[in-house]
Image (cartoon, rainbow, N blue to C red; front, top):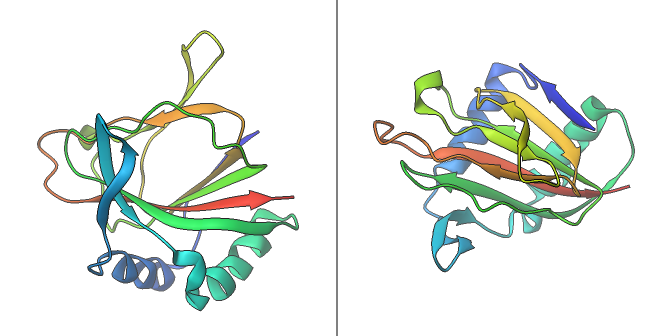
Length: 159
């Protein structure tokens, strides 16, 4: 199960979410010791994300669930994600950046049991992706010519 929906929220809501993502709450705690990237932790402690936005997400994805961890990933150029499974029922990702060029890369890559990619989802503003948390995946690094922060808002969901 891999779902991709463009124009997930209104433009006003996308902008509001992105404004919250540029707060100075980032720490270099994502990934691993040898391959780190930026994290904004504990968004599940903020009512905006845990209640207001979560209700909107549930309405749009069409199934009942509860949210576990809510956080954001941030990647600057050349910071890739580690290949992993999430271990929850469903992972929901939302891409709030106001603009993105395909040549900046930063795709979400799904991998089979032989470590071969079987589906690639391009990063695109206002796109939502949700998938089974047991699917092996990683995010490719934004290109060296990208000089911003590639943000993905993550919800670990349980059905």
